[in-house]
Amino acid sequence: MFSNKKVIRFFSQTIAALLGIAIGVALGWLAIRGAEWPAVKESLRSVSLATLMLALLIALLSSWIRAMRWRFTWASASVSTFRLFQVENAALGINNISPIRMWDEMASLGMLVIRDKLPATTVVATIVMTRAQDLVFTLCFVGLAILIAPELTEFARPLALMSVFVFITLIVVLNWGKVVRRIPLLKRLPGVTSFGEAIDTLWAKKRRLAFTFCLTATYWLILGPAAFFIGRGMGIELSVFQFTLIALGSIFFATATPSLPGAVGSFEFAAVSLLSLWDVPKETAIGFAVLLHLILFLPPVFIAIIVLPREGIASISAWKQRARNLQKVKSSDLE
Image (cartoon, rainbow, N blue to C red):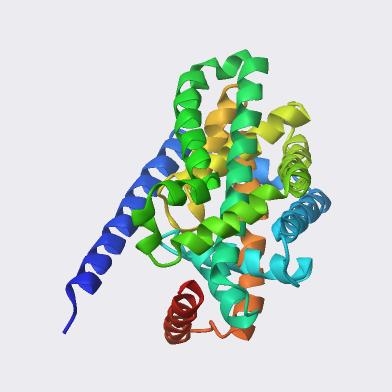
């Protein structure tokens, strides 16, 4: 007999999945509506295999720098960049094929806590810190782009509102230790105090955080040339800065919006919409969006296929058992 919690979780996940499918299909339809498919096919053929391989190598380099960033976020832990590269991409691969995009952090946490015996609170704190840096850099870059490119003026108000919300949230999270000390009731919740201590430990390493933020900027900005080479191969005459904005804006929109697995539909909608600001033909924009999407989202899936069987997550039953083991480890670690 199913418990109320299981029923509620099942229905909430089902509703989230159906909502994502509906939004993804709608955005995908808006992206391709009115396109002439022979022209789309021709735009895809115009890019050479060498150009695609170069873009793929740049995307993998960006992923490696992202893993380096995560490695240097750790105040004290013997975990290698290669290990974090595997974990992060495997987790992203799970997210990319899941109808509900919530497995990324959970999978990373599971692999590092169960396999590498790392403290759960420290893992969560480093994940929170890296996500915070991603948000801050993306918002700052898009804000700079709005100031430079008059075509983006209409996005200024939504970005300002989002920035206020994000920065208030970041202030609370990054000062979580002080919040807990001011509200004693929070100390009764399992893991709250130790999580706050882990955040305080990371926040105290100002030079390390400055360095990791530089790595954050580097791995995001490197995606610009990947998009640039694909776009120039299709005859799109835009600057590296514009292609970087398109790549970052598309990723940010696709990951923040409920959608189909792999952000199918939402990514293409964002890329096509941004390219339309510079009067790029719709057919060329669709071809560009599809190729950039594949370059960015497929490698983590292939890495997940290689890595996850070794982690013991080769089946649904194995994943459930791993989740139960993780819960036990977290309970003992957070007490």
